[in-house]
Length: 161
Image (cartoon, rainbow, N blue to C red; front, side):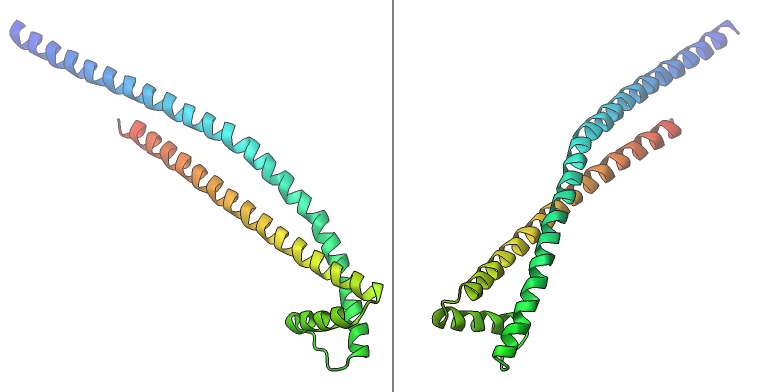
């Protein structure tokens, strides 16, 4: 009976060691998850603040561009009244501006052509800016998803053990 009791105690002792090791592993994994979550938060917070700032800046540029578009639309109407063959496509407008530039020294026409080029430049800049923000957003989302997945795995492991 004493030998059986010793064997039982050895089994219980072994199980307790395994349980202690599992608890230690859970603690290590938990601290790793906490570090990753903190690091992710530390990295994402400034980036998200920066993205918010960037998203607010283009609004003013967009408003300026819209105002220039309105001015140019008005100018296009005037040019069409002067040149009824002109169409509203941008390529034809460029050809029209090129032909006018070669033959006209009217300061108003030259100013309009400069504004048109500036508007094209602002639009391209804005499109690049939006594409960059979208890329940053995708990276942030991927990082968040990775951290969430790691966290769920840790929770699952902790629940199993």
